[in-house]
Structures are given as C-alpha cells and as structure tokens.
Length: 414
Image (cartoon, rainbow, N blue to C red; front, side):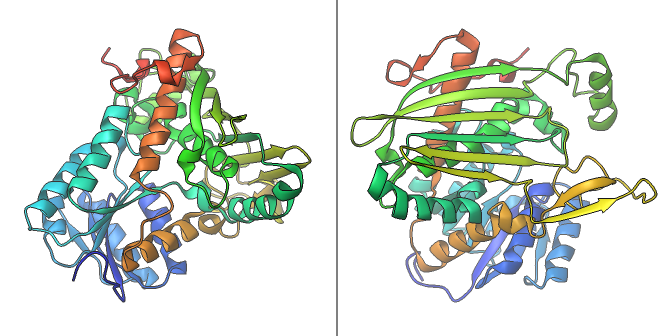
C-alpha cells in the first residue's frame, strides 16, 4: 500500500504526552476515521497516563513506547504527530526520516505542532528531511481552523471583497499569563520567548485572512518586518522568585530573561502590487479570565472582529463559592470566582478539532494538507525577521537579509 492509497482508518502515533498532546487528543473525539495507536514520551508516567486517556476516550488501543524507534518500527502507526518540546523536534524528525528511509518504518505522514523549529535553518532542515523521506507533511497551526476564522474569512471573501476590494490589514493578538512547562521559559530550549511561542499563531492567521481562498499563501510576498520585544512582568523581583518556585531554579529571569511582550508589523505585497499588513501583539503578561485571542480584518468597506473571551456562556460565582485552582473553564484560567466566560468547546473554538480532521483526512486519502512544513518555514522566517528587527532597532527588508543562521539573542549561549 503506497502513500496515495486511501486507508479506512488512519493509525496515529503521538510523540510527546504533555499539555498540548492532551489538547489534541480531546479534539480527536470529534474526528472520524482515526485511532491513536501509540505514544512515546521519555517520562513513563506521562506515556502511561496518555495511553489510559486514549482508552477512556474510546480512541483506540494505545501502546506506550519508551523509545521513538520502537514506536516507528512497530508496524501499528501510519502517521505521527510531533508534539514534543521545541528543542527536541529536529532530532525527532531526523530519527523519523532515517527510520522511514531505512525501511524499518511504514510511517508515511508527519504533522508537527507550532512552531516548526527554533531557527530558519532548523525549519528548512525539518522540511528537507520530510521531503527526502517521501513523507506527506502538515504544519499544525490551529488558529487557521478556528470556526470563527474559517467562517469569517469565507463570508468576507465571498460577499465583501467582490464589491469593495481585497482586505489590507489583519490584526491578531494572543495573550495569557504564562506557559505551563519550564522549557517554554528558557530561551535556549524554546528558541525565544513569547514572540516565538505565540506570535507564530498571530502572523500566520493574519497571512491566512489576507490571502484569497483560491490562492496559495505564497501569493503574498513578505517585504519587511518591524518588531519590538520587552520583558515587562517576569523580570520583576517578586515574579522572578515566583517563577523559580513554580518552574525550578533553572528558570531565572533575573539572570536569563526572555521577552514576555512582543509586537510586530509585517508588510506583504499582494498579487496586484499593493501593500498589505499583518499587525500582531503577544504577551505572557496578561492577567484576565484566561487565554485571550483577538482578531480583526479590515478592508475598504468592511471589518471582521473576533474575541475568544466574548463567549455566549458566562457563569458567576460569589466569594462564598470556593474551589481548587484549575483550568476547567478556559485555558490559562486565572480565577475561580467572579463573572467568568466559559468556552464550552475549547478544542473546537481554538480550531484543534477541524485542524485534526483536516490532517487525518488528507493523510488518510493521500492529499496535501492546506498547511504544510513549507508554511512552517515561512512562519519561522517571519519570526526571525521580527526578532532581528527588535535586536537591531530597525525595519528589516527581507530581500536584503539572509536569516538562515540568525538566532534570537535570548536563545544564544550566555
């Protein structure tokens, strides 16, 4: 059976069993024609817990593997989802490519969580390895599949653009109070700070909204990048100690901070030669009800607006109602009392369900996904241009720069 033959069921192996892996797993409850048959994590407790969750959700019989090679060569996996920390992804991709090319693995497709890599060189290598191994590949950028984004874009381009002209400005913001795991906070491991961690979402959803539905994302040519970064909250003494207490002594923002705020402006040239702009803001210094995503799309005679916390469902709990700290109402929840917005289907609102449905069906039927490693490379190029702009305090003209070997300052050795 070759890659282009339709499978009745796609058997997926998860590489990584942390927070984002469980988010993807929950979303697969709403996806047909898929089973989760394997998981690899270096932490035994995490892989056992993940396999138990697969069983509980009725998503198949999942075998936990203590080595990646064993998962890949098991004969029980058709496609793998790379959901491990940023600093492990290139090494993981090398093992996948080598195992497939040697004939030891029958895996024929790979999907990778955002960002594809920490630098442009790493991203290009991820793409090269996937294509040399003959793998179908998908870049997991959930916001492009958010129901609000897909529905809003469809209406704008079908009704407004023919009458008034194409959109020219996309604004995207994503903010929360900080990541879950220590490696996110460490510039050398994560590859940066909030700009790499979260602006990867914002720049790509902006580019997606500005691109005509029947056109490739490359129809917009990246011209320039202007970026600003700052550490506003987490380098203050009280929060330095808070991070050490919660994340461990190796996360020391008095000595090695990464940015917790970033703003970027990307200018593109559309097929008609007009400039269009993506304006993005991201922060780990936002304290509100939870994760906040805000999107706007502006054109000559129309506007699209979305905010993830303007939910139709809200619950109020008085000070007489107390409960344990958690995130059962919305991701990055910061309180257990008061008036709180509820996302009744986080996986659906954020786009994970439709993203995974799309990837499963593309891999299962041998089609190329809407978002591939090529797009992952383009996103990393945008982010590196913004980092270089912030470091050099100038607008980066992309055609004049070779960003391949550029490493953000916070990711360099001390």
